[in-house]
Length: 235
Image (cartoon, rainbow, N blue to C red; front, side, top):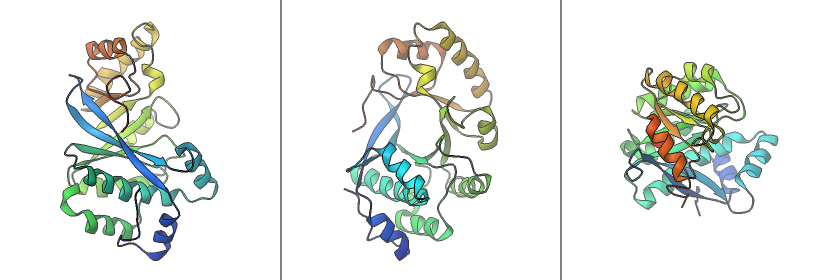
């Protein structure tokens, strides 16, 4: 269980964080050999409801900011407690960012250990805020960390969003990946995306790889990184 009461944060946000009952698990993102871990994605696991229900509940209450702060502080605590060395990938709402004092507290608490070790994944939900993205962009680049666009091809994450964010990685949504070994239309779609992203020096991550045949097909196409149950489940 992740606890927040010891963190150097304002009492109001600490109170809100204290109402959460969550753990974090990590799912590896592999290089093309299927064995070398490039990064580990931190995934929130509430103890009393599903993560989807939690997000929807906090969205209704206009409290997504609490989950944004909880994810950064909680995921990094869990990451360091486990002693991981690879990059950690953290989900971030495109409509929100940590406030100045919270970002300062994050840097104070974790220090230089986070430099160059984080990937900030811009989720496809609920909406994109240019104002918050600019703040997030400045802090991420200042710490030599990376940006990723999550679930490309679904929700709000499309070519326009890629042009704005200029990410280091793009994660292809499972809808583009599932069954790609035997669905020619999906093969054609991904074959068009690969040179488009590579020309922009963007690494491509295939999400939701659940079958060996999918993995082999994607690797033959030249996809860079892989994530899914075929290679490893969240743990």
